[in-house]
Image 1 (cartoon, helix red, strand yellow):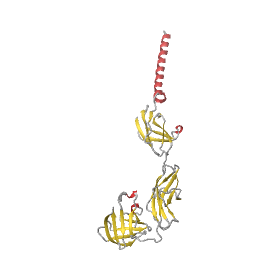
Image 2 (cartoon, one colour):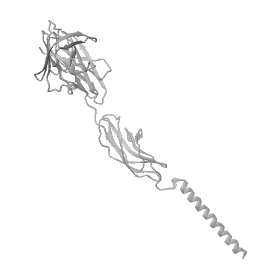
Image 3 (tube, one colour):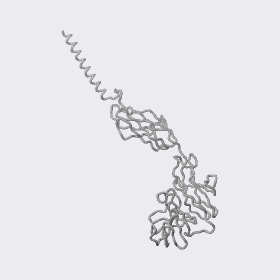
Image 4 (cartoon, helix red, strand yellow):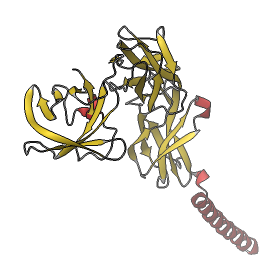
Length: 344
């Protein structure tokens, strides 16, 4: 009898121990996520689209957030598959579903590798690796300004690099010749400056009363980009430094707001002190005028006629072939719409 009681007591004790062990196991499973089969997010990498020289669009989709809420998701980016986590682009959103990342600041003509990621409390899930190549670098885009201050034997050439083609600019400057579209095989000069925007250079030893053609140029690692071809005529031996004459507004793309390219804007200043303004050969107004000097090398033409659109113009003669005429509402002296070339 005592043996039977002892055996039953032993069995009861084992049951108690087993229940405690089971409870401990449940606690361990609950506290330690490594016991679970799915604890980190499941992610898919989207295809890369809108690939440009320095940018692209990528993204991914969080198919499952795992056993905790997704706190961060985005793209890992690198230039090689084994170093793909060089850059991290994080999308400021959480949870499951698709997301998009804008990749910027990339290098032109370069291979990139991306993969989507999503992170929760227990770790980071990664999508498959997707590769793409940015668009290659191109030639520089250069512009030659048409208004050129000139003298009998010199001219100041003006240019502008509007794009480096996403490649390092090696050198830039101007070419000139008596034939259109001069190249580096003609007369050329390098501008020694680090300013890759607007640039200028005065060339000398020109012949009087000769028409020259000029083009700006810039060289990058891809090759040489040329600007538009412009022309100028050096002054004759008998230098005309008066404002008397017929002046044609320089056609320039920047003038589109005020003087579209199809509009011919001409100002005629006669020797008997009469000022005429024409648009497309139509007389806008004529008026007697008087001249008074003012600061910064500018003079002011005051009109006596009420037909004039403005009470006066500011002007300065740059040389025998070029003049700058500004209306009183322009407070700066760099607008290309203000430049006129002597045609008579």
